[in-house]
Length: 189
Image (cartoon, rainbow, N blue to C red; front, side, top):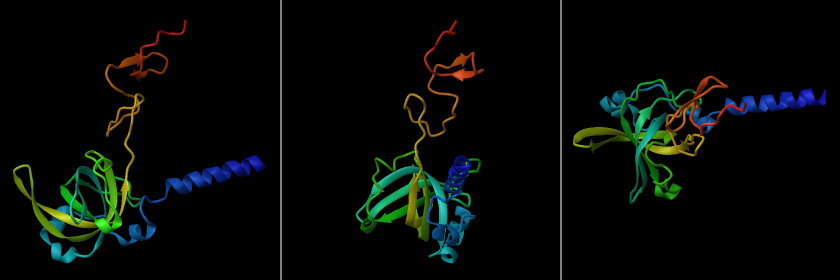
């Protein structure tokens, strides 16, 4: 009887942890998640001061006199703050983090890392992507979550890791019927 209750308790705990948002619940309920960056760029005055929940793929992190600044590619999020992988990535945005709150170290918040943040829309800023003029929506970060980097079996980082494949070369695993990237091992007989 005790064992059944213990297993049930552990299962409930895992369920609650799996269904918890990555950011503060209050911010998640206040912030808008269903929006378009192009709509913000067309009518910024309507959205100024509003809270948004958004995800991103970091392009660059800079330390400025005022604090930290992240340039990221916009990725929509679901109701828990998880990035929607199957969606179209629409554009870029800037997210600022005041020096009084701390710094976002460029070695940790580096290119290719994924983030989810709650940010207040503060306006637009003109900039360049290579030689092209671009108007960035700018958000003041209220809370940020840095997603874990995925690693394969050998410790290499792959942002889009598929669990059955590691670094080249691939071998066929005769026991499980799938590609195998570890060292070739002869059959046990």
